[in-house]
Length: 212
Image (tube, rainbow, N blue to C red; front, top):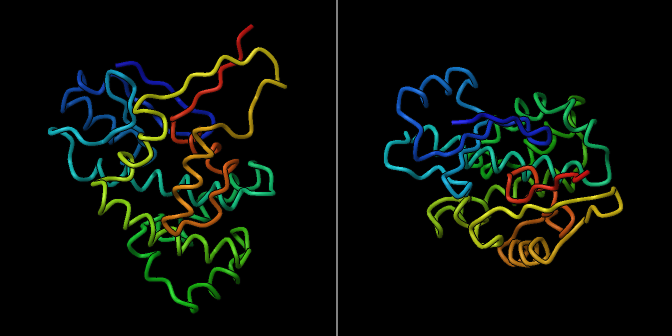
C-alpha cells in the first residue's frame, strides 16, 4: 500500500489495510520500531482490529492515540513547536504513554513530573493526564478499543475539508463539540472542543487540505 507521513502526528499511515500482507506489516514495524503507527482500512477508517494484526499493533495504535490526547492537552496555550521538541522527554517521563501505568500515578509522581525540566511543568495538565489515563482505560473496556470510541464522532470515516485560504481553517466543529461533551461526561479533562479538534487532526479523523 501507499505510505504517507502526517506532519502533525509524525506517524505513518498505511492504506489500504486489507491488502497489507503479514510480511509487509512486519517489515513496517521494523522501520518504525513498533511505534507511531496509524492504520487505515479500505475506507481509511482508523482501526487496529483485524484478525491478522498482532496484539502489539493493537496496543501501539491505541496508545498512540492516548499520546496524542496527552500532548494536545499540554499544548493548550502554547505553540506546537514547544511540545514537539519535548516529545521524547514526555515519553520518558510518562512511561511511553502507557495508560495503565499512568492511571496508577500518585502525588509522588506528580511531584516528580513537576520537577522534570524536560516537559511542560503544569500541575493541572499533569493531573489531567492521570485522570485521562483512567478515563481512557474505562472507554477501552466499554468499547473494546479507543479507536472504536472516537470513530463514532465522524460517522466512522474521516472528514476531509478543502481549505482555500487560511481564514477558512476552523478551530472547532460540530464533531469536536460532540466529542468534547462526551469526553467531559466520562471524566476526561482538558478536552475542550478546540483541543478535541486538534486531537482529531493528529489522529487522522480530520484532514484540512489547502486547495489552490
